[in-house]
Image (cartoon, rainbow, N blue to C red; front, side, top):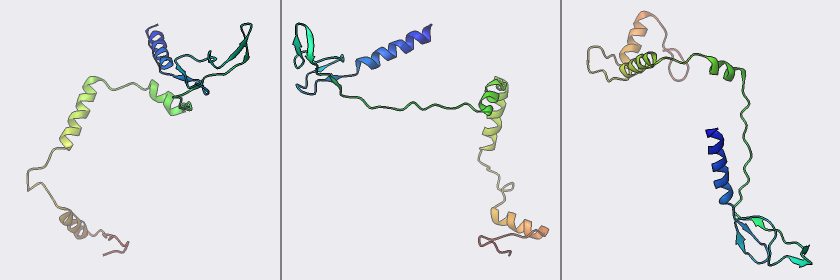
Amino acid sequence: MRTFIKVFSQLRLMAQNVIWSCPTCDEQTRFKGLCRECTEYENGVPVKPVHRVRLNHEPTQQQTHRKTRSDYLNQRRPQPSKKQLESMMETLNEASKVVNDEEDFTSVGEAIKDIQDMGFAVVNDLGEEE
């Protein structure tokens, strides 16, 4: 019920922002219909009706998302608990810490040299073996 009230109030606010204008006399109002000044009446019946035009209207197309099989499976998949989320965050934070020990750090050049010493071929940028 709350969501209905919320959506209904939003629709009402959106409807209030629309401005209608008469194309002949440029009178602006917040409701659509016939312009009372430009429409010709005969015995209370409109003979030549002049309809108001919407001013600030930008037509938008409805973008629909078609649910796939994976969407249905993912919504039923159990979500991780708070403890699991905390442990995942701890492992990510530990992996992102800066290494301060110079002994544990190996540069890229040293790693490539070690791979070559083991007997593996290293391929350069051109695709040729060194």
